[in-house]
Length: 97
Image: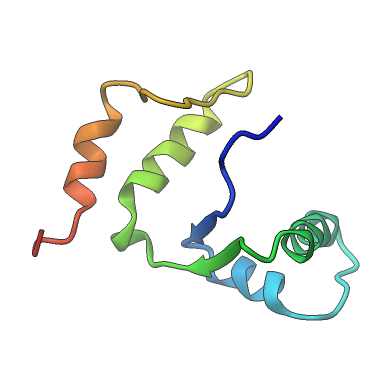
């Protein structure tokens, strides 16, 4: 099934994690397993990327991540997000728009 989610760009405010993803050496820790999965995915999907972005430039993603921590089950929206998301995303736009 093609979800149409590729190509993708993941921005993270966790600079240390982004650096670990881009380092070409194995990590011998629990986090290393997750990093390995991410690097394998990126190797199979070169049209995807993971980059660092300060939290101040992407508060909407931070709000969504905090919301995700409160959930028991997985959730995603293909077309319409909850009403509270739009104002946060609009507030994140550069002031020049």
